[in-house]
Image (tube, rainbow, N blue to C red; front, top):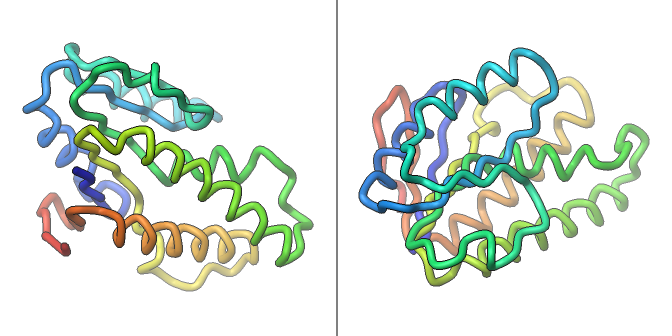
Length: 175
């Protein structure tokens, strides 16, 4: 089972996902954020303190192996946006052509798809930021990232058994 959980910043999407995973003792919490600065370190620390101590925490955003999840019944991935950000900025993308961005998008999608394929026999709660509801970004790089995330979200929603949008702490079932 795959539940795809979307929401804006501070919408309550992570708390919603964590509450769902409470039913699974020994679940895996896959934290995908890379720490770039003190503010991000503080955010990560708050998430770590909030996590169920019975969960196995795995902090990485790529190169997943089946052993990472062993015989765990459920996996919470928090979040897709941070995973994609890590993969997106592994290269200097500042001067990428449209074709180079398309190739990068395909490589990132293959990483996402391989992770989901590894987890096909588990209950998966995949959290992501809905970044496409705001203004059109001024900078090309931001527009490319936003558009890429939108396409990833569509592919995942199609694959998901459930899609939930969290707004102001309230969960709205989309699919």
